[in-house]
Length: 102
Image 1: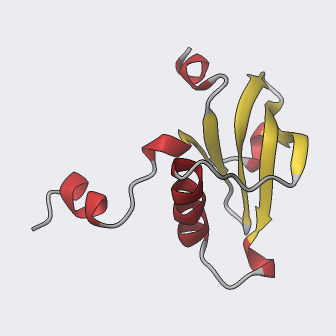
Image 2: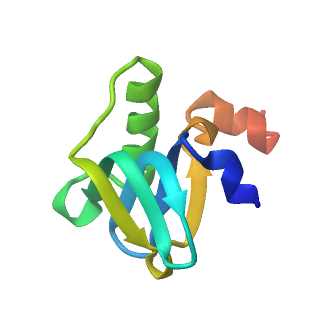
């Protein structure tokens, strides 16, 4: 299964609402996802967009730092609209290169 490739890697779980989850994917099943060393972020409590927050998290991770406010968290599958590896986040000039921009 495709999600098996993301096991034990840092992932971003995006939701249709203000919540975004970043953590190490420990397990998943038909009910949802278990994340370890997770960062649960409610965009409605801050000033940055979800994209800005995820990009900053990517940069922190690349620098050897990570935001963590939960040791483990379970996220229901019905709350998630996308799952991606944190390392697949495209920021700055990389976005132009990936999109074929000039």
